[in-house]
Image (cartoon, rainbow, N blue to C red; front, side):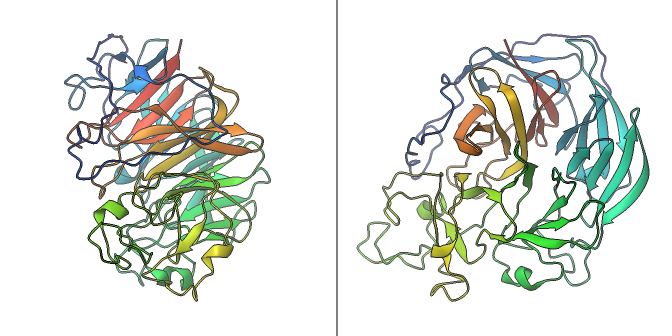
Length: 455
C-alpha cells in the first residue's frame, strides 16, 4: 500500500478515441454487429475525456506515460488513488470506500479528503483468506473470504465482533480439491430481508462434478438472516462473481461462462464445405457462449455446463448479428448432446448479457436519480476483458438502464484500457456510485481507483 501527499496536480493525458476497428486490432476475423435492442437509455456517443491525476497517483506504471480513455460527454476521469490489486468495493455508512485485496488478505479503507485531493488510506482488516466480496446491512459489514463469510460490527471507522455466518465453503485448500480450483474468490450480497447470498464458482471450465458436490459449486448459495447452513438458491452458475440486489429486492448475477465451446450445429460454419459440429473454432468461440446477466429466483437454473446462452439471432449462421437480451439456451455438444442431462429449451431466457469472454466481475445497482447524462438508474458492471479471445474483448465499465423493473441492454460508459495490439494498461473490476454522486472504479491491473464525475 502506498501513501500519497494530499496536494493536487492536474495532469493532462493525451486522449484519442479508444474504440478500435477489427483491422486496428490485427484481428483474424471481424467482430460481428450487435442488434439494437429497446430499453436502453437515450444518451450521446462517448467522447475523448481528459484524465486527471492527484499528486502521487502517477508514481509508477501505467500512469508514468500518457493513457487514453473514452467517457460520456462532460464526464471527467481522475486517478483518485493507487491501490495495488484493488478488487471489489463497498461504501461504509460513514462514507469511506472499502477495497478488498484477495492477493494481500486485507481490506483497505479510503477516506475522501477535500475536493481535488487524494483519499487517506488505511488497513481496516488484514490476515484474511482471500477476502473478496463486501456488503453492508446497516452497521454490519459482510466480508466473503474464499472459505467463509464473516460479519463485523462497523462503527466510527472501526470493526469489531467478527462472526462466521457461513463456513465450510470450498476453495483451493479444500481436501477433496487438492488445489484444483479455478474460481476460489467469493462475492456476497444481502437481501432486503437480511438473507445472505454468496457466489461459489466452479472448479474449472466444464467440471460437471461440481453439481454433485457438498456444498454444491457453480451456484449462488443462500442462508437466512444471521447465517447458517446454506442452501442452493440458483445453480448452473459457472462463476457468478457479479452479485447484487436490485431496487425491488431481487438478486442478480453477472456470470463468467465457459471457454472453448464446440460448434453445436449440423452446418458448415467455416466455409470449407464440410459440417463443423463438434469442432472448436476460434471464430465461433469468439462469440459463444454469451456471458449472462440474470435475475435470480429460488431454484433458477442457468444451465452450466449443459446449456449455453445463444447470442446468434440466426443460430449457427457465421454472419448472424448478435443479441444479448432475452436469449434462449441451446445444448452443449460436449456435455449434453441429446439433452438428457438438462432440457435447455425449457430454461427461462437470460434477461441480459454481454459478449463472450467479457469476464464481468463487480456488479452494483445505482438507484434514482442515477447517473448523470441521461443514464438514470441502472446497474454498473466491471468488465475485465477476455484472456482467450482473438481479437481480445476489451475491458470496460458497462451500464444497464433500469426500466420497468428490469435491466435494459448493455451500454459502455468507460473504455479505452486496451491498446490497438490487444495489450491492456488497465482492467476495471467494479464500479459503484459514491454518496457524492461520482462513480468509483477499481482496477486491479493498473493498481488504481478512478473517480468519474459529470459536469
